[in-house]
Length: 551
Image 1 (cartoon, rainbow, N blue to C red):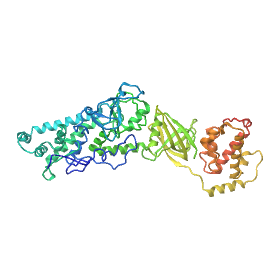
Image 2 (cartoon, helix red, strand yellow):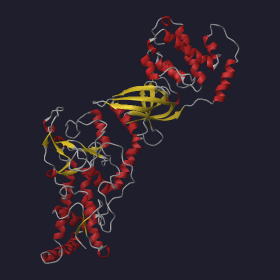
Image 3 (tube, rainbow, N blue to C red):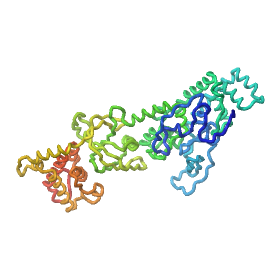
Image 4 (cartoon, one colour):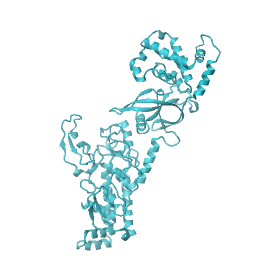
């Protein structure tokens, strides 16, 4: 059996263990260049004995094949030793930002990247440096213990004799275990990263030798656990991202920090990355190490975060933005600047791109079973059509109303409201027709009874009242019907079900009046409300001019 043999494929055979690919199989919870999380089956942790080669490969530099020495994680998420960094060169035609550290750059040595990285963005990876130091201490401890054994003394006696290298490794494996032996080979520069190791066959491997590797891995997990905790949430890092200053945090935690400040929470250095972390790669090496050593813990952490992101159990999974009114099929333009709503928006964009919007209840009027809450309990579900994040983290978003809803229960998640909502639907057409027949059959009322006369109008007559009013206002060049308004909301719809929402979107009256549409369940009821607005407007003096005022 050959000690070292070059493997043709990118997979490294681990003898009796399963094949292991450094990035593809285990990086199930990692993002490439800030994109969506790769959807892969949950990986299983590597075994201490059968996967010893794959475990050591996780911490080998792709350039020198030695275990990482002063590791540097590049902006592309790849890691190499600091001594393996390519020689820097002067950048040309770069005027902004004109900072000393950005005037020089390196060409990324990784084929998957090949980009130009400013030298100031290539700093020592603090977490990986501490991690490698802890690993080296554990290996040194177990190696020193094995050197004091009788078996090691015998090994030292025959080491210089003319036995083959595979036989020597077999003797070392019997004394030190696979993990320690493989690590030491890599540290001595005798094991290339893409080469395999020939171990003793399973039939001749004793339980004691397997126990050696289990003990080593157990000590490694205990020693490294404290190094892979996020400095923001103090939990196991999930989808870790390394900043240009070399500090590593969970992706979600870093995004939350950037909602409040553009500085690293550890060293306070300024970070020139967007708050959304778009285009920011995960720390690929750290992701592989976490998935290789403790994949079960990573999966459990991911499930907990996913549950938190959706608002927890109990159906309180709809994010609620307390702001203003919106209507079905109508656009709403919002500017999001508060950190809590930045977080809400980011979760919506990464999810189904939907959130509920409610009108602020300034007088704390009771809202049914909810009581005197700070919002009106009828709202609109919005779908994000377009979003643009500005340099300061503020977002400008374009949304369109999907449907109305009623809030049944609510809570607070990370500063913003979440709730359980019930979709509000109109009655059937049969019921709509029945109601119209009843109301239009009522006996006539006095001429000055405006409400009674509106009630007795047919649905088409109610629609005609609104359409005729719009034509008259357009003829008078009303400011609220200028072309820019029509470009946004469109022309008046002929559909009786949609007209009230369009009318409320363009008419400059108070939101409290417009809110009357939100709880309706019939087209006719909404048209009666809009007709009553028109009759009230026509009775006011301003109607004789081109302006408008709040009712």
